[in-house]
Length: 150
Image 1: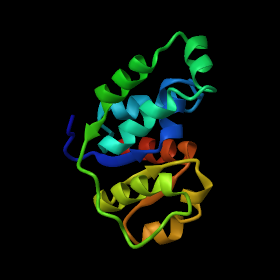
Image 2 (image 1 turned 180 degrees about the vertical axis):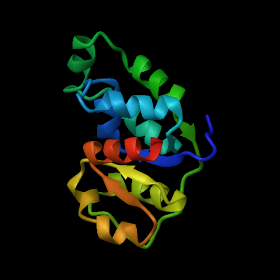
Image 3 (image 1 turned 30 degrees about the vertical axis):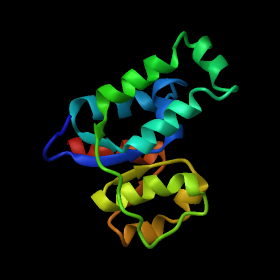
Image 4 (image 1 turned 45 degrees about the vertical axis):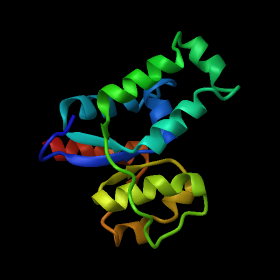
């Protein structure tokens, strides 16, 4: 699902859960930006694997049931919107949370927007900017996406 001219974005797993499971109030605009091609979501196989693993967590399964979703539903939504890319090489910048490194590496490789609420990622914002990565929380990214669409 490659969109030329659109801004690449990397979504961490918690944002994906907000988007497809928890129906976070900020996510409808993000979904429209992804569906319309204003933003081009990129991910690697380890990111999809992490999502699949997280969807089996004992505290997530009841939420899936509450929203009448299955892990397969969420993964199908992921697959429908994402452009899968190769795993990015490790950048010189290391995240304190090793699970978040793959998101940082991919965002740096593609000089993309990195959407995360993770403090370990957000504390690296200044250093990531030097690598061409704009980090944002969901609300900030949505404002950016709306501005880019104008």
